[in-house]
Length: 498
Image 1 (tube, rainbow, N blue to C red):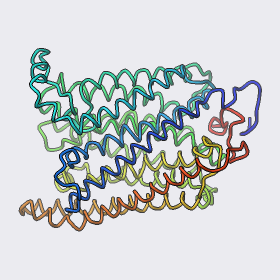
Image 2 (spheres, one colour):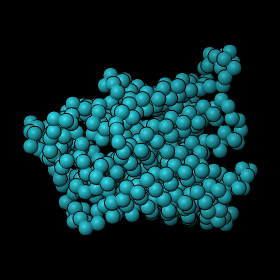
Image 3 (cartoon, rainbow, N blue to C red):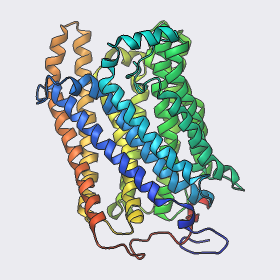
Image 4 (spheres, rainbow, N blue to C red):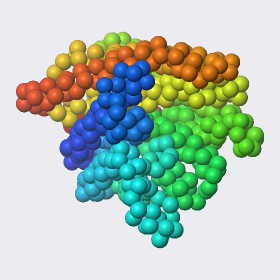
């Protein structure tokens, strides 16, 4: 059946997709992105002594660095992915989620989790000075914190962790129900989504419970490193690639180039990625065969990523003119290129020789920004650029502002990545030469100045996007003719035509 045709045998889009919930998730995601970027600029300003808010305890860099990372991971990315799931899964399965009430409960519960984590980070240390906290810990024979916990990306207070774990289980049930009810072959997007439901549940439990209550000492540190890396590879990556396998064929109006290659990418990710976490702990007492195994598996993932990139290049081959006029496709493929660069860089930096130079330097910070903003955030901005006209039933207020948002984000993140990469190399060489620490800090100042201007470029593009969205919402009443809404049928069949 061709795109846009209708049949009484298939449910209509409005019958199975809760567009209001998709909008809500996107609005909250953009709110947390705004908070995260403000926190990042605050820390960048403090490094070069430009912070106008020095001396304010609750605005200290130590607190807002954690807010910055958590707001991106759990506020922006998670909310965005949940919105995408509410659009894609019903359209691929031709069925609504198990329960709309459960969907609304998960929405409000997740915002509570993210906001409670931010509150625990900002005011958490104050709790530990209270005598009753110590008494409660003693009576329960558990050392806990009512504020943030001491684990990167696992700072959620201990009393939030069971709530988040339950929410992840309910999420898997809510979306798993329509997926398991469908008959016939399952499109690769749903493979990625189902894997993400299982992997995220297990990864969150591993990182937030084992180091705190079961595994002591340096072993807990190793699990923490595995947790951080698996959040990227087993939570963000499968959801990100899954949505790309849906939206790219839809926009190009052609099937994915090779269904077989898409499965190679999936199984390669499933096999190699869980083995990588130890590469955060090279030159430690962890057995060397595990360290070497992590290095090899990290390099192997780059080969897996190459198969995915080739698949998407094959899909767009012969239709590259679309990059000039279609901004969402430009977001998607720019992110894919940067994903390849990220994995190539990772394959280099995990080698034992290179780790001696760049460990603990700004090279790692640049790498993190490239993958989290340059890849997954850019993909999400592409999805939002594509979906908001369909959710609001009206064209974008300004295509020029959409262009500015893309170019400011793309150019800004590349400048930040290159700047921090060279900063890391300088820092590593200064440390290796055994010069005093403050010398490396002084030589980093010009790089940190460039970083804040790169961040301001990205932030300026984001503000253009927010203004464009606001003006679009305020524009004339919606009409069903604006813009190719694809609401006549529940699914675009190109993605299923292997």
